[in-house]
Amino acid sequence: MMSNAIESPFHLENRRRQISETLYAEIAELTYKQCGVDLRIGKRELVSARLAKKAQEIECDSIECYYRTVKSDHSGQMLIAMLDALTTNHTAFLRERQHFDYLAQRASSLFMGRQSLRIWSAAAATGEEVYTLLMVLIEALQLPFPSAHIESCLQVLGTDISTKALEVADAGIYCAEKLDPLPLNWQKKYFLRGKASASGMFRVRPELRRMACFSRLNLIEPIPSHQLYPAIFCRNAMIYFDQETKRRVVKSLISCLEPKGLLMIGHAESLTGVSNELTYLHPALYQNQEQQSTVPLDKSGSAT
Ligand SMILES: C[S@@+](CC[C@H](N)C(=O)[O-])C[C@H]1O[C@@H](n2cnc3c(N)ncnc32)[C@H](O)[C@@H]1O
Image (cartoon, rainbow, N blue to C red; front, side, top):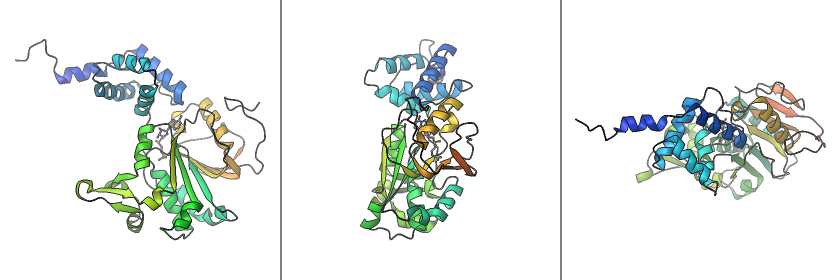
C-alpha cells in the first residue's frame, strides 16, 4: 500500500491545477492589461489548466508558486511565456476561405499600378494564414513560382503576440494533416516532404518562406510603423477582446490601411459599434473610407 507521505501523481496534478478566486482574478487582470485578452469571467478552468502545465514545466507544485516566479523574473521572458500559454493560437490553411476567394477575385486590381504588393496578417498565430495568402495571390495573379522576381513583388507580414506561435510560423514546418485543406497540386508546388526522421512533416519551400516576414507585435500597443497596407487580416483575435479594446485596436488598424483598403476579421467577430470609419462590404469584410483620416491619435488610439 502507498504511504500517505508520498503524494500520487494524480493528487499532485490535481493540487497543481488549483487556483484561488483571488489569484485567478489577478492573473486575468494582468493578461487583460498586457494583451487585451479578456479572461476575467468564466475562464478559471482554462487559466488553471494552461498554467498548471507551465508550473509543471518549471517543476513548481502550484500555480501560485509558478506565478510568483513569473513576477520575480525581471527579464520579462517568463511573463511573455505565460501570455503565450494563455492565448489561443488555433488556425488552419485556407481557414474561412470566403476571404481568400474574395482576395483572389480582387488580386489583379489590388496589384495594378504597384511594383510590390504587401499584405499584413495581424494575428498570424502559427503562420498558416500568411502562407495561404501568399499561395492564393500567386495563383490568382498567375505569377511564376518559384522565381526571384516574385519574391520582391509580393510580401506578407505576419505578426502576433505569441512568440511560441511565431517560432512555428518562422520554421514553416507542418504535419501532413495540417495541409489537408489545401489542393493537392498546391501541396506539391509549395511544400517539401520530410524524409527519414521528418517523415510525415512538410516544410514550406524556401522560395515561399522568403516572401513571408514574421515579428512580435502587440495589437493593443501603438503600432511602430507608418506602412499603409491595401489589405489587413485581423481574424479571430478580437473575439477575445472587450468592446473598448476592440475600438482601440480597430482604430490603429485603420491607421495602417490605405484609403479604400480592406480589413478582414473573423466570421464569428463583429465590429458593430466599434468604428464608423469602415464600410461593411460582406460578412467579416470591411473597407476603409476613401480619404485617410488625418486626425492624430493619442496612445489609447482615440482621436486627439
Ligand atoms: C485564434 S488565433 C487566429 C489565427 C488566424 N488569424 C486565424 O484566424 O486563423 C488568435 C491569435 O491572436 C493572437 N493575439 C491575441 N491577443 C493579441 C494581441 N494583443 N496582439 C497580437 N496578437 C494577439 C493570439 O496569440 C493568437 O495567435
